Image (cartoon, rainbow over the protein chains, first blue to last red):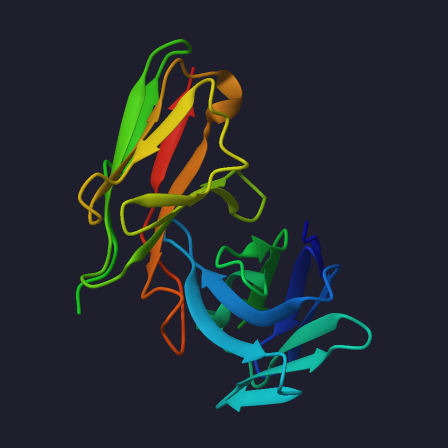
Length: 112
Length: 116
């Protein structure tokens, strides 16, 4: 089955700096890669996703890049703000399978 | 649009007791998922329903866990008997279904289970 590895497990940045979180996946048949943000006591919330026919996608301060050859994808947050502090999860979904395989999460702390 | 609803939000039980969780997906969503999230880890799929049929329950510990979605809408997840290692957040998610152009999964707030 699919295996998703995520790094780093914790990340602390100063407000206004950029943050980068990286994930690798094992199943070359995976074709959908969402990123979720989870705040304390809440369920994961989708912040951006990318499909395998696209190399990069951007939404305001958030961008995701995908390298299918290397089987890795990354989340980039620019101009970080204290409200970006949360746990971020990457995930992957294989063709024909609807459920997601999640990474282990990155706790992002943005210092004011 | 109302989100995925789950209840209860918190539950504390002793080992060997039974417990049930309830989920109401977003209206019109054909696919429903139950995930287990152990502290410090990402969610792990337990079971997936398409309407009222099971699509994937390969990671469900069937000797103690059961789930149903009788009318293709609400779902219940049951644990009987509970073990200490079942302490986790149980997340319900729903999506439109495989025929939808975008099949985004939306998560509920989860039920935090503590087994003593």
